[in-house]
Amino acid sequence: MTETVERTATGAILYDQSIINQISERQFTSDGWPHAASVGGKLGSGGRGNTMYVGNVPKQFVLRHYVRGGLVGKLVRDRYMFNGEDNTRSFAEWRMLKKMVENNLRVPRPAAARYRRRGTLYTADLITVRLPGVRPLSSVIAVAAKGPAFWAGIGAAINEFHAAGVYHADMNAYNLQIDEQDRLWMLDFDKGRLRTPGPWQQKTLGRLHRSLSKIQSLDPRLNFTPADWEALLDGYFSASRSE
Image 1 (cartoon, rainbow, N blue to C red):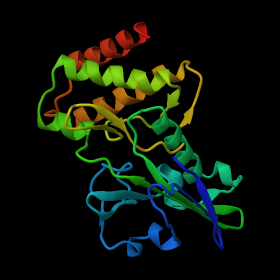
Image 2 (spheres, rainbow, N blue to C red):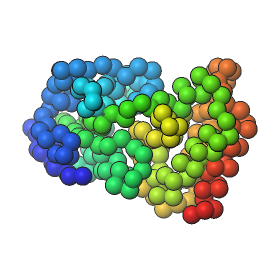
Image 3 (cartoon, helix red, strand yellow):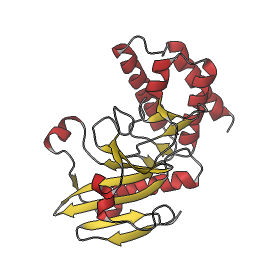
Image 4 (cartoon, rainbow, N blue to C red):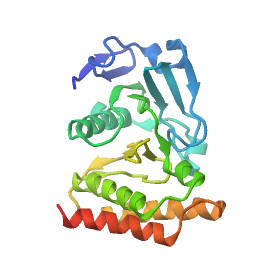
């Protein structure tokens, strides 16, 4: 993968010329593409309405504008304190995705990132290559029950990320995506980073368990049981022992 940085009037754009050979500010808006459609529900990034599919099939992208969640997001929707270009959320996530792609982990390929600075604050955007044929884990288990082999495979895949030191700040049933071969992919690495293995690994598993339990409590028809979670853990720890 290549890495090119172009300066703009208010910030900079980082992009991979092998994917997008020319980039402009317009491509970080829906008007900069011949086709653009909002991502419905929680497929792309927490369901905050800040993500779009842009471009034409087969070369389609996901454009995400960084927005805050929680109580802070109600006061300051999309502004962040500027602490250096390399620390902007978009540049940091772009480079983390690049490292993971180069290590053959199943994540979207980063195409371009932008930040726009105004005084001490900035806004940010990220463009990634759209993954074909993936669905959120939450949607997959809403359709039908999955057997132990499926859940063990999910656990083993999570372990692969953890063994590579990948910390996902919000690993939940929406950011985990399943392809047509039941393989796991991970999305949305905002605030993620590469870390030395440690207690954070169990904490992220706990976050995923809370996410699955929460959506199952909201819809009891969802196909998630304690036995499914045990199968996931079996796959995770079996993979750990085989490293």
